Image (tube, rainbow, N blue to C red; front, top):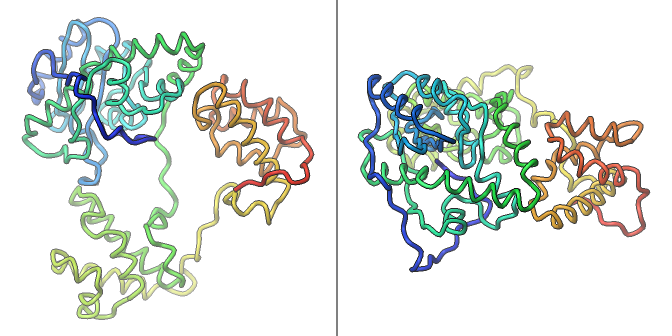
Length: 421
């Protein structure tokens, strides 16, 4: 599991917090079809929810596939599965399909699990539960320590999980990620029920089971870090060719694109637009990477393609933005919209504080911006509810947020009212 946390872990760990150890030792990964079928039978004979985690090789591989899947269920113990040689994990899905899956930060792991043939019909997301409860830290280690009194060892979340064989310390770390996930789930359910948020959580978890991969952007090369340094369409055309060439090579080699040539080097090459190999090799960002010298002709060919793009086919300086512009520009362009957004944010922030949950879990900020930039006509609760539901808001969120948003959209601006920023 490669966690993305909203807040850093506490730097100091109390010495009396016991370090968690795998109860049955560190299992060896399942690597054959026969072992997979035996593991499926073992998990199918277990009872209750199943804890699931997956490890990827982000930053090392082009693919976002799972390179290790961990499972634990009452009566079954912990199972580690290497999906690479198995051609899919359908036997696991067959026996666990109707069970509740317990994951931490489920949206990170569900796509790669689906790629192995595993999709849940019911799940419990421990990170999302922590957010709904307003816990200050929602990383797995922090929550295990706070709610269960155990300390999880950390250190391998960003490792290259495509490494084979996997080192024993990595396997131990992976096994621990599901060791107490079921106990954590039960502790969180108890707190959610006590806080009156259990029904909210169920709606959130149900929405996660219907996840779908986001469509790829129309012009993915525009996400290159440092793109803003390129002012001329010809430079953008060169960058586009460099990005495409790097992406093709990364796909062929199953390597993270940035490990071949980082974005900063692409931007420098586009700025310099060299005409000869000597010119290219003299570019500082390229010169600092001698390993790329053998591919110098590839990168120069990409530069030349960009230089030869007809003027009529040059990319526009910037792609047309989708949705409203950044809120910092509203006060000058649309002061009434800025006033609506400021009022809505203040009301929603106050409600989120009373409910003890992050405001982004009360309603998606993008949905609020779209409503305030372009309100429905006429503005009424039915129209606002419909627009929130169209933005994938859950019913509990609509029930709480819609009245506040209607008030913000219909209230006349006050003199000296705050503006969006």
